[in-house]
Image (cartoon, rainbow, N blue to C red; front, side, top):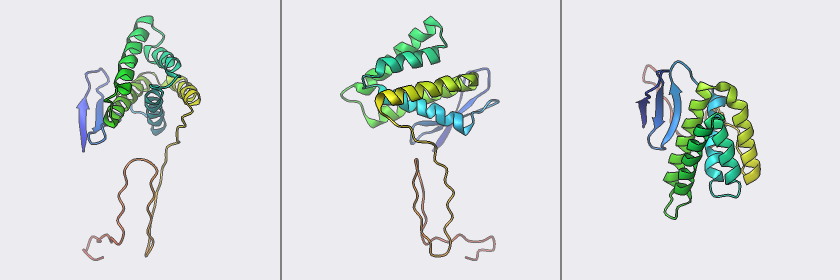
Length: 179
C-alpha cells in the first residue's frame, strides 16, 4: 500500500511511502533523484544502520554528521545527536526488525533530501558508504534490474531484492477475452 505525504518545503516535493515496508520510495516534485542516486541514498541508510552496533560507529557518526551537517558545527552536532538517538533505539534490548526498517527508511530519506538539494555531494556520500562498509566488513549489493519473460512451458522464479509475484500456469487473456 502506497501513501503520499506532502512536505512542507519550497520545492513542492511529495514523498511516496510504501506503508507495508515503511520505506520511502521517492520524492516526487520538481527535482527527482535518478535510480542511481536513490540506490546510493539507500546504501547510505543501510551503512548507517549496519554500523550502529559496531566498533566503526564513531567513524560512521563523524562521517555522516559532516555530510548531513554540511560542515556547519551546529548542524553537525544536531545530526550527531540524532544519530546517537537512532543508535540507542537500534541497540536497545527490545529493538526489533521494524525499528531497523523504520530507522533505515528515515536515514535513507534524509540522504535523498540531501542529494536533491546538493547532488554534488553524491561522491562524498559514496566515499562515506565505502569507508563504512570497509570498516564494518559489510558489502553493498549493486541494484538488481531484471526483465524476465517465460514462454510456453517455462517457469521462472528470480529474486534479487524486494517483493516478487510469480504466476505459473497463468495465461493472460487478450482484449477479445481469448486465452
